[in-house]
Length: 137
Image (tube, rainbow, N blue to C red):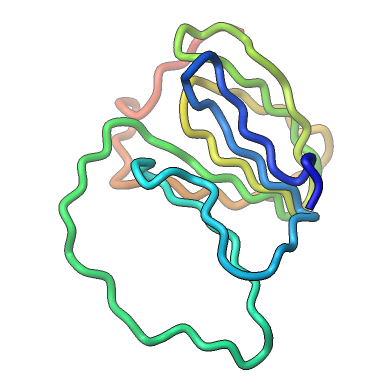
């Protein structure tokens, strides 16, 4: 693993984003997020024959205050502009096929640099217009 495979982006103490590049490929289980994040992201790589015990997930009441979203870039290239909670620009990153980003704080915008397909995962239920506030870049 190189330092370029995993990038944590912050603004002061505020977590903004976590990027896991498509080249990341370490054996075992690695959680990249702290236990208090409402969206947990891990990478798992196991050898042939490895088993994960059958299980169910218990009913646990959780309180989610902010939406965190995960984007997995299946194909293409995306420019991501990142902002802190005060809507100040803090950086830009380019994501490519195989990359994953957890948007865990602040704000963001996207520009497709080529035809792009991606998968988004975030908490629900969706609150419609109450889920986000748009602002000028």
